[in-house]
Image (cartoon, rainbow, N blue to C red; front, side, top):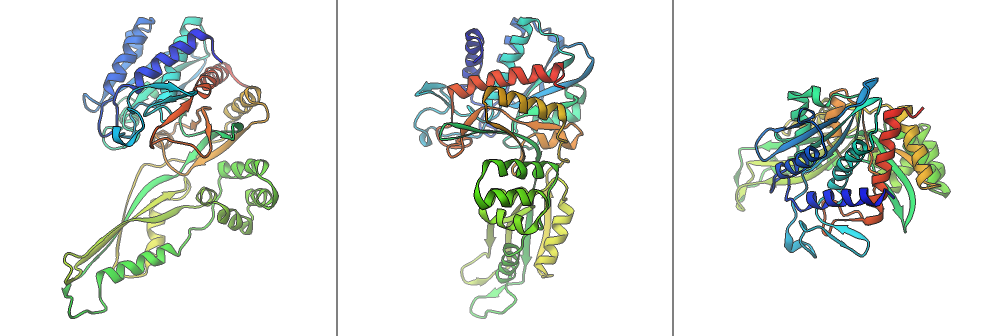
Length: 442
């Protein structure tokens, strides 16, 4: 646990952040940024080292630099301060009131991602108070609109307009989880890759007609056939350095045939991959690009042949795959010239290399704090702002070390919470890992 004074500081910042309504579609990040900037000023951080700005007045981002010797390039410590919208009627308590009870902190953002944001700031203040002199600058960026990465996304805006403020050797971000099973520490996940996001639109247009005179050339039937073929199709297995390491390490956590299959899959056995994929949708998603129908619409009247039918197919694409390949592949799968396919894809970047300094530091500290717990390299099947950094050439590693029960993760959901013990242990882990990486872990 951190010293009591540092625990109090982190809790105070955490409470302040949670109680500011910063929903990505219903609130503002600027009040959080202003509160943090004022706190940093009171701690003696020069105004010249603190930047506040964003696309619009309500969506401000904060970047603060803590100077080291400059012997090596900076580390970027990233966290987003927007949250998913939360309605009072859906929760057992007010989602924007910070509540500590029964060993948990409750409130929207307690796990995603205000805990990490509060810890980065609290630890930065602690470094300054202690006179810590790293061999590289430490940059903390608190950003807007990760949950709804549109035109106000803070990371994209900073990369485009103020790259110099966040340019770094590598970044530490959310995206990894500390996994508990029945209270036992199992793995401390560090994500070094993410799938990219794309939406595929399938559309059929038709002249239509009267429903009393049906014909085979029906827009809905064409679309239904296309979706059935996509539903029956699976992309081939493809592993990268990160997913091979993940499967290899997961084999140590499982038992029986699954453990054997995970080990063989990590070595490229297609048959083993098939069995592993059948065992878990999550394992399957780790090993291939996936596309799934998520929305459907068609027709314009109950007594008319449809003049149009449309569907959205959501794709999560491996780092070494591409939207162009996905589109070309699914056009061949659909094999119907009446169905038009178009794709809209987000930024994408390569997997981050499993750097020895980062992985060794995480492994050593994890084993020291939680003996018997493994550091597990992983690839996110979802996305974070890390994808924008990787696309811009900044390797990014997602972790939090804020341990949660594997079957009770409430991010984006009702009664979001984080254990008090996990918060303070995570505060210590993040404090120590940055010191290791800033002074050299090898």
